Image (tube, rainbow, N blue to C red; front, side):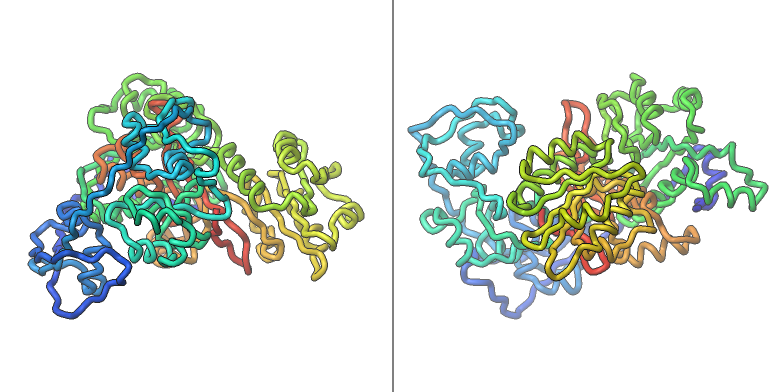
Length: 595
């Protein structure tokens, strides 16, 4: 187990000050004389102006000043990709003529009642208007679209309406985007865009218009409910706040550690206890805070050892001034977390539940950082409905704890076969052999959190795989039992095992982080340490770039090493992370696939 350096002293002092420093950005843009060709199907600049970069400026700031994208600046200054921005360098800034969009007159309108799963882009696309036009018709929806809300729409017959096809993705055009920029982002060229979107041929590309696009993976974009959105990199954003105060309430239980006995301490920390989990999480967060300092962010940290006792938490709270706290992380266990969030003086302070997947009370200012199991299961059921042909040979294997999920799946696939394990968590081999066929694709959905059933069922199913018998394995919830080191990744790869999770174990993509962690703490980071880094780094960037955590909700989904974060309101005052990955075992590895 990992013991952060000087942790005992840190806990005794209850105050850590991560080193203060000043960020010095030298940002520059250079004039260049080489000819830069732009695809002819993009918007052509009317002229260029020269900008000499001043101290403290960056690309994001310039894009806002000149009302163009960072990509447009980089397109006409390709040396920026190689050299970065340097003070006193000069930039060619494209100036585009203002094309006045013709306002559509909607004399014939109807009242539309917003349905449960409606979104602005879905309504706009279906009714053949842009999102901007939808918002002009209905100014009240600019900030929020509500269920059962009455809105105004153009009156169209069913033949005029567009149908949303789950076999395609959709993309909302940003201001001043042309074919070239859309192709760079999505990989889709003008010919394909025009063929799938006849209205573009008639009226051209318009800001807010929703395009129908083929299902292709783009590393630059996220996918949210069928809509492609840009990935957010907060590291490139302007800092609104460069000093942050974080308060941790974690169950280190330092009184249980015999610091004078190295052998006893080592044995204690090797066990998976609340102490070891807290230390893993905090070790990851230390590296996050150290990385934040490289961006010019000063962090004042206060760490409280809760001892996993509410009376200890109360004693610590009595001595805590909450006036300048930006975020509270913890306590870890729901009981203790609920106790802290019930205290009136912290009502307006963001309080983040860091690790527990068990429900907590969604009081004012609560942020649940773990994507709820029910949310992931619902998303996976929708995916299964889309991706599995109901005429396939569908087998549902579920234990007694997952009867509700079994019932939901049977309603999705009425012709599916229900297979329940025997006492002792195993399947009868002869029965498995008789149910898996060679005349149809076999789609097997495994619903259990028990390691014994996961191990035995997956082995028996894999033994049926052959050139004649095609088998794919799924689950609606990938709990920690599926991550047991005794389960075979090659077996799961053979079955194309597919699932959704809030955790993407792509550790091999980040050797520098792992090396740094090993050098600092003496062993590789585990899942909890990765969560500590990702969560704390995200919180720091959200607060420093948006001013406070509540204001950061509008920026959408962020992604780091192994985790994503997209906080959405569950009521007016509390927020839940609804970010997730769709993953598949493939050739001894786990890969992300299209949602």
